[in-house]
Length: 227
Image 1: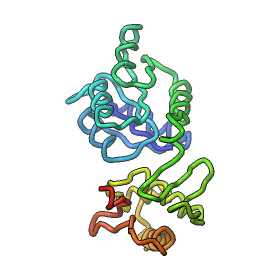
Image 2: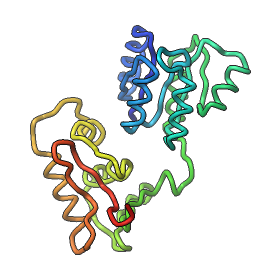
Image 3: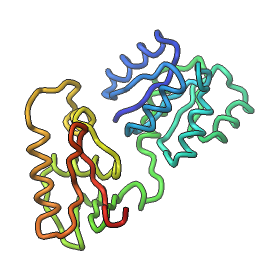
Image 4: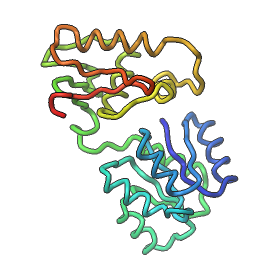
């Protein structure tokens, strides 16, 4: 699981980052609302942990803006404002959970894990489609034009991440962190090799290419015909 922590208290953010890491959860950190909005818009996260009172843009405004952009990553709001009206306001702004301060990390962790498992509509959460390419996360099956395509586990994870971010450039760093769980560049061509193999499998014998290399940036999967 990968989460984004938006917290302006650097000591609190460092504590949360360490505690989540020890629980096996990778996290990024933003220290203000504008930075949080940028990261949450440009990257894929399983859960957002957002402090309500932030510089430059408050947490509720951040979440509202994400929802307006069509980004529905589950968001947990942390706040010293814990009255019923405060919690209701936070949930109505688009938050999925609200935890008043002070809190026990064990409870925060449990809530984040629940949000990370939360499912929306089965169509949205369990199936990705780009053109005539379909990836069924539950059945672990990939089909194109109704024809099943056999992928190795790493190839499946790579395609899943690309399709989750369809229409957007996915950088090498994003792939290393989210598909290979590397937080450094091992300076190998492992990504290029896997992308090449994946491309051959999902595009062989099909007229329409879907996976392209964006020179100097990364990769993108996109249905050019529909676009």
